[in-house]
Image (cartoon, rainbow, N blue to C red; front, side, top):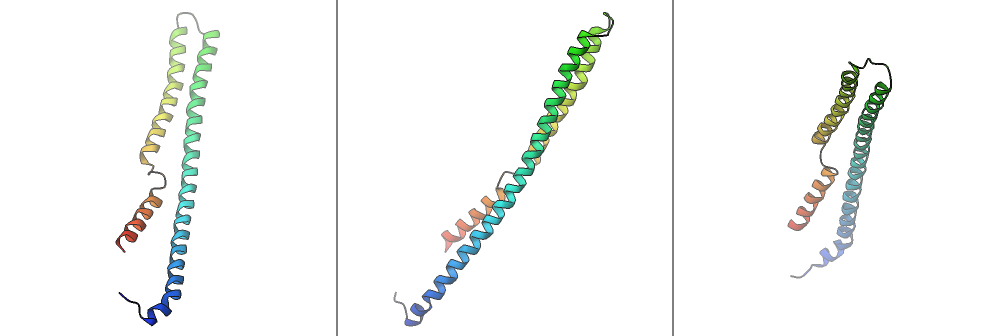
Length: 128
């Protein structure tokens, strides 16, 4: 398995092209990774906002229950009023939690595209 003189002369050019290809693939993967990082940041902000809303609604429900307990209802309707207000805010909180669950169910796995591309690259390198 010998090399010809022409093949030896082409070796620097072939090496240069191989390095350029590796650098181009690296840049491509880095760009994809940065795009996915940005998408994950936006998703994380949505999750944080919904969690904050759920927490606020739950705490507001507790506060309202306390205020209603301290104030104004006649004794015979006090329990029903407290239960009704608490139910409204706790249902709002439950709605936020269910919305968050649906958001997680629709969201693709983090860095899925980058991992897929790296798997393809590895497969092509193993084949060649």
